Length: 316
Image (tube, rainbow, N blue to C red; front, side, top):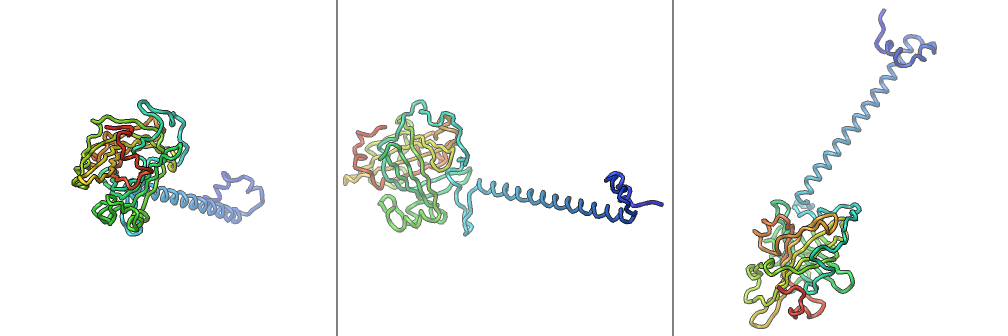
């Protein structure tokens, strides 16, 4: 007489079962129920593991997509946040607030005011166009920079091509609001360190864009700022600026700033800056450190001191 394997397994499973006075059929039934329960538990564990693996795969796919930009409800691709390197974790205390060699505390006074214009941001081979506005505010002990802009995807990539012309101060019009509200990005930074650059490090020809016909450059200021992101933790940036005072035959003046920036982590001790301030596409692409560049026109200063270039801190 031979018995099913379930009966043989009784000897290994639980010897106490034999002492309960159960018949062979009752022991078989009990063992079958035990095995069925174990199989059900194993199936449940397997299903859970597969679900977790699937979820991890979706997150990995989402992460890959985030590196190439984001897509809105209409399927249009937008650039990823300029704060892409920021981590929502506590930044290490490694000399993050230390004044770096060649820098001093503060912000150059000639950059103070409200600015607007075209901005370009690169992510690998992808170039993103923005119409942006920035306010450099020196009116307190802490020097703040607020920056916001609207992504330009169905235009020629310029503010003017979107019905907004910073050259004529129309950033105060309803057209401007329609640009920056959807879609838009906003940043709040604190400018903590500054230094002047040599004239040879600021040789971009601002007149080469063709936006300022009949104007001549009468003065330039050139420098660098180190900034801390106040929203994205552990995100820092270095921004190079070239400020150009323009004047035409009618004595009309414009102040044009060319900005190029890069970002880094873990404090100012790790700062890296672009090679030069520029708004030339080829130079921008060739500069591995440069992540973004902008050509801004002053929309309004806190006073008229910007016209007195002899008082600028970093005359080039």
